[in-house]
Image (tube, rainbow, N blue to C red; front, side, top):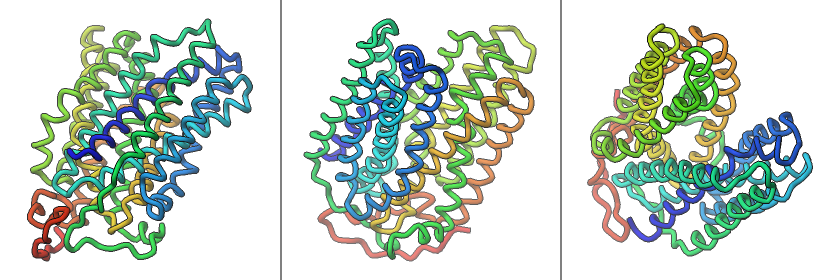
Length: 425
């Protein structure tokens, strides 16, 4: 990795750390520490999602026009303001406004950092770069939650003020670090399409990107959207899982990602992306079957807990396979100069799935145990179907970038002769 990529990965880790540092404690902070009640606390969590949905459509165009670094710096300053204001807020209005600023800033960081990774990587190194990003994000989330949990004290509002002040200072530190990055010219691939106006109409005219967006929605809806809502409610209500076992299951998910991320990377890099995603759908189908056994199999409490933990571990394995696959594919589908808009559009799809997923899965997981498992088992099989269908829209190089190593133009080097490759069937 070059110096620019190292700084970008520091930004990924610290932004994830900030998210894990404060977000898990927002509900308690607003409802109990500030005494604003559970309804206001619920609105605060909703504001995070709404703010992201509002700003992401504009973030893409800003990244295309201004570049990812200025947009990232603006997002970091906005997030720092929101974090500090949230730590000092003592009324419902100021809490909601502060949460909107923090949520908007954190939402824009994702596509800006992803676009910087695209600009600082080549086609054959991009999968590894995004795998490192996902690894550091999970590490940052876990460490942030662990440290934040030891700082806060519900009997002292000042401990939460300190928490948000540290987060704000961290974002400002990131402003300094990111200001020092010298962005190279984005590496080009011979034959790559060029942007024509940069409009949403053009993006929606890209059939492969539309299909990937639909697939992405199902991925995030059926997995990430269930972690802390429907699946945990199902585990407690149907399987009788204790809170300690639930914590163990979430730890197993993170541990699987940390252990498997680079172990599966070489395997993933040598295979077609559509087949990797299709395999993830099958792995997650097995995960939902394990969850069904935990809650509906009428086995012992120990066996139910073991099956439930294995569900989260299998989800982690699928996530480790997706991280070097989906995000680089979004970048490779983008015409030259449009990576920012494509990254923002996919981030918008992710936010929609994460907003709808808990709303649908939460009530089902708590009360409709059998239908809940069947529904998301079918969604997982749907991932496999959609991935196979997407593969038909991709060129061989888009589907398997290892085929294009000779076609990548190294920075400062001479371009290789372009190879005309027909679309795969």
